[in-house]
Length: 438
Image (cartoon, rainbow, N blue to C red; front, side):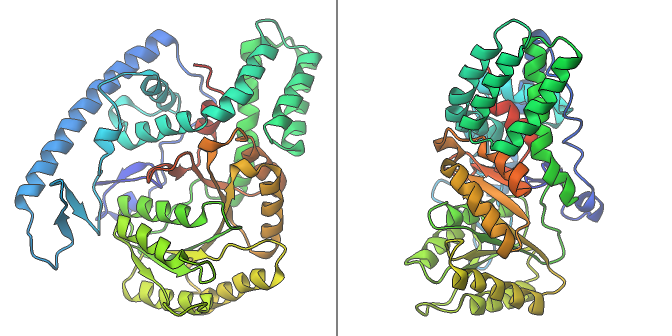
């Protein structure tokens, strides 16, 4: 068994039924978070389960270390710290250490509460989920301070008024939520006010619900709730975007995520224009034990690199090929045409492959990032968006603008500089982290 972070569940790699089974972790998102007393009791019980899991993982790791073979051709190795590493299937690395279970701090209580609200049973909690939710909550701190403080001041304890709704409009626009999303949310809220009196707590709940609707609409339209590589077939994901948005770093984190989840992965270093780009990709490949296909020739043809990478992926029967493309301005037609050339190579050599074109956006760029999304969507056949650097920005609301105006599904978000600070997007968790009041 291994924890597949794309699907957010444990899977048996030898069981096709488990692999193809649709994730049932993310359930009805309209459930309210339970009372404080019940939540604390639930968190304590979950804590006990996790401590037991921690002991079992440590025991299994020690047993595996004793049985490990040191022959040079085997995948398994022992690093300097004595921990087991594998280029084929990376174990949980430092996940046990990175989750501070011993201290049931606010992040832990909030995270367990949030998992419970999604219908996850306490004996099914994965350490990876707690680790990520804590990172997400901390990563959105700047956006939360900029938005929630003003929001709570406007809401107060009294029923909502038209004046309060007008103030909410200003807050949403300042958070770069975009005009379309703001109008959609406030129109629903004003309609509700015309029907009945809405108190502050119900107003906040209703606001969260509508934010989730905006974010989920393009995801549901795509017919794919989670972007998950299909095991046993070739999946090709192209990462595109302008320079400086964290595209190559995002690719490295996706590679690490794929390896941890048990997917055989290759990287194509097709950014042949930027100095040292290939070397940077190789560093990320080494960190995750992923082979990098590249061309040492200066200014090599990106399409030629992708050609070689597809051949290698087929010969190795890889599940996932991640393609790093050159950063480009959306107004440079010759560079945009280069993307189309790469797509033609993929269509010719791997017509059966599942191809995704993911735009990487820096959240701190706000509305400029939205304009990039609109331009790339027209010429790069985009299928989704990865939003990065949420931890360094107060403009987390740009996710709403991307979903409502560019109408693109958000597939992954990054909320930190660490290797694990990138995960599949979940609107319910994002909104709760964005509007967390304690």
